[in-house]
Image 1 (cartoon, one colour):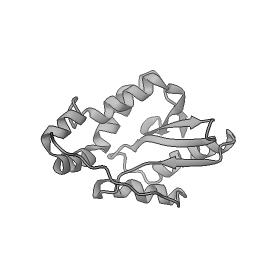
Image 2: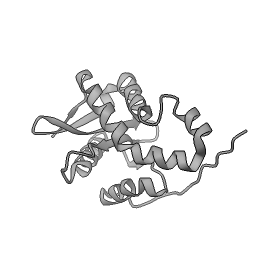
Image 3: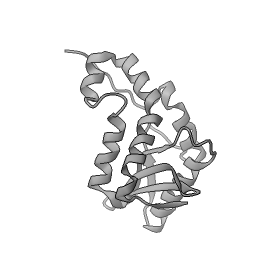
Length: 159
């Protein structure tokens, strides 16, 4: 069941975010090294995504939903609506890696995409990485119907 985010959800969604992004943070540290990783994630790899999610919750709680199953939060999704471009964007989202349930991500994407359609938006977008750690996200977005993409690469250099 999808519902709006509530302040009392914060610790749980931060924990889910930190655990769900652990493989991504590990991959990024291997690729970028300690110096750049530490600068990009000053809170530490194990807390950085949770802090990003906290910021979204504080700045735009109206575009933040959680997914509950049997009274337990099993996932969250944040999004943005841009009326100027008639578009919606799925931002941070994750399913609790230990919940053991299938289809939670698809349930969240479906709810947000229906929200975008009801708002009269003409397209939706989502961004993710091209590395091995983001492969599950890419598959999930494709299953949700995202079928057009632009690919890019971001380069880093220590100075």
